[in-house]
Each structure stands twice: as C-alpha cells, then as structure tokens.
Image (tube, rainbow, N blue to C red; front, side):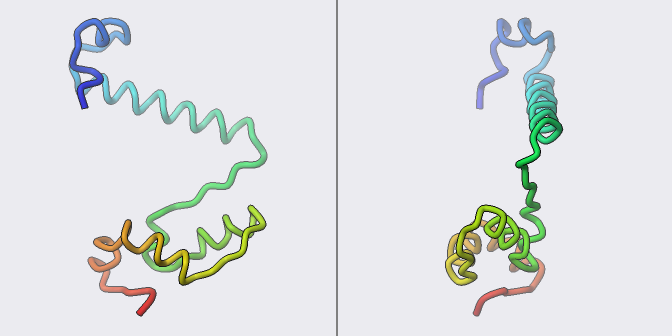
Length: 95
C-alpha cells in the first residue's frame, strides 16, 4: 500500500519515512482499540491464535452474543483462514 509514500502525508503526521508512517498508523490504531476497551463495558476480546487449538474463544463470543454455536459451521468458516497455522502445529480440529 502506498498510504505513506507521499511527502505531504509524511509531513502532516510528522514522520520521515514510509515505514515510520506505518508505525504511526499502528500506534494510532492501538490507541483507538485501547480507548474503546477502556470506555466500553460491552467489549469481548478474542485471540485468533487460540483458535488453532480449539474454538472456545469463538464459542465464548457466540454465547455472549446469544447466538447458536455450531462447531462444524464455525470450523468451515475458520479453518480456511487458519489452515496453514493449524497444519504447522500438526493438529486438525475437524476430520
């Protein structure tokens, strides 16, 4: 992406390089997430990395949302996105 390649953009956010522009963006994003979680009681965090071993994170979220949990449906949605990580660990959750 070319978001921070232009000098006018780098000048506006007071950075010198494209890499520094992306670091600036990351800090802005972290601050936004922190402020959302600090000021909101209805926030649930899930850790995608934990879904390599099991789907308890998503099960917890679906329960919080009062949605029906169907492991096969969840697996069919998540597995393609985490396939490489799951296979790297040598674990298959659904056969």
